[in-house]
Amino acid sequence: MGLKLFLNLSGPRTIYSQDHIHPILMQQTFPISDEELEALAKNSIDSVFSTMLDRTAVIDKVIKVDEDNHSEGLQLPMDANTPMIAGTVGFLGNLTGIIYIFMELPLAMEATCKLLDMEESDIGVEDHELVNDAIGELTNMIVGTFKNDLSNKGYECRMTIPSILRGSNFSIEPAEVALRRIFKFDCDGRSFVIDVLMKEEN
Amino acid sequence: MRLKVLTVDDSKTVRIIVKKSFKGFDCEITEAQNGVEGLAMAAKVNPDIILLDITMPVMDGVEMLTKLKSDPALKSIPVIMLTAEAGRENVMKIAKIGVRDYIVKPFKEDVLVDKVSRVVDLRPAGEAAPIQKKIDDPIDILVVDDKPAIISQITEGFSHTPWNVKGVSSTGEAIDFCQKKLPDCIIISLSLPEDAAITLFRIIRSNAKTKYVPLFGLSVKTAVEEQARAQQAGFSTIIHKPIDFEELESKIGKAVNLDASGKYFQMGEGYMTVKLPKSCNAAVVNEVSTYLKSKTSEAVNAGISRIIFDAQNVASLNMDVIKLLLHSMKTCRDLSLKYALTGNDVVIEESKKFEESKDWKFCDSLETAKASI
Image (cartoon, rainbow over all chains, first blue to last red; front, side):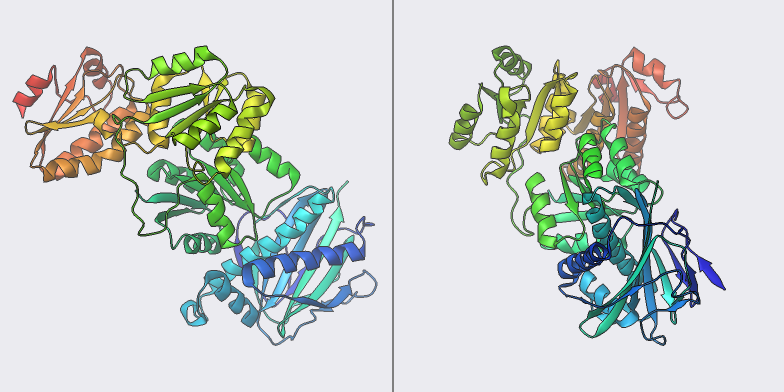
């Protein structure tokens, strides 16, 4: 059973899923090069991780998702059995798109503890609300930095409110998008993935 | 007095981070999750500063800021935007509505504290606050204007107060004055040549001695461009010419944190009198409400058990005044205090038009009121 995410999200929400995600953007040529996009992704992660978490992360893998090369869907480049949390924020404007941050739950918990200056025992494994909110805000900051860099390149956009998904064994189905890249990051041995989908508006 | 900070953000995480950032300071943090809650909370607690996100459900930060700036009772509250939304267009749009500063997420906690401390007097927890001056204490107001007529007008306008007005015509003279004597408040004409008002603003704000002195811009109401530039530079309060001295006096009182309770509350001969002024607008009602609880406690502790609400000077009865009186009378009943109302013919006539006040009994003088309780 597929799950469609739209850009005009009306409020914060959490979706529990082990489903496929169907991006809904259309195929187009794209004005931003792969190198530029990688730099945008890297800068947004560097900025947020160093400022808010006192941590660094490095790009481990970049996957180009084309219409032809993944017609049967793409498994996320992460351990399928590890529970994950995914934050997502869209942006609308000259460039329209959506960015997903898929994070292993242990890393999400560490990030929440650091952000809120709490111990894991203070939060509790079952306190989804606090972890969801923290990862939602982290995603908001990452996409915000990404979007602000786009703005400096002349692409004005505004952001949607973050949404959160929880689950495991995520896979990504083929999508008709102008540009889609998946960046796998390593943060002290823990993994997370950024999935960027964008198209240029006429 | 503890500094009141209102954080308006849909993210609980950000609200927790804000609380954490100000942990070591003498602050009281209140929270709201969106613009609607933010406006309600601002009206309720009258914060010293608001930290406002942009992208929020229900009502976003831009709409809340616009409504805040169009509300006479709230528009002087300084706002710092704390948001992931930067970009030139966004910054320009918000600067035009009037914000004191802009912090882009991600942010370091010390940056947040530093920016807030540039706008309000942030003190470490436990540090004694300076003794609060009263509304009838002498304070020093520096007016920087190259038009002597305006300086004379302001001096004349405050002649009924014990306030000292010193006028200078240039930024150099203003800086010299501040080095010799720290004024309680500075009013700067925004029409000084070569953007001197903005230059002076920056000099004053960057000097450790003067950075907390309240600064008001002075401008002709129609000089919109000049005012927008000043707001972008950081002026949070702009006084319009021709000057409404009642409003200016109230704004200075608030900015300098003067205890204005003496204007409304008097105690003696076993009574506390709450004297309402001629113009009872929302700002006045808000000010009276702020002091009501503490002054009533003070009266009770002084052995006073009779209160007179004196509306003889009130020009017109409005719903804000009625609500204030209803609340005050309920407080009296809760504390078993005796009370009486006085009013003029207009007030008595207008009170009959409202369901809440149609049965109120007014005395025509303080003497009659005292005799009735």
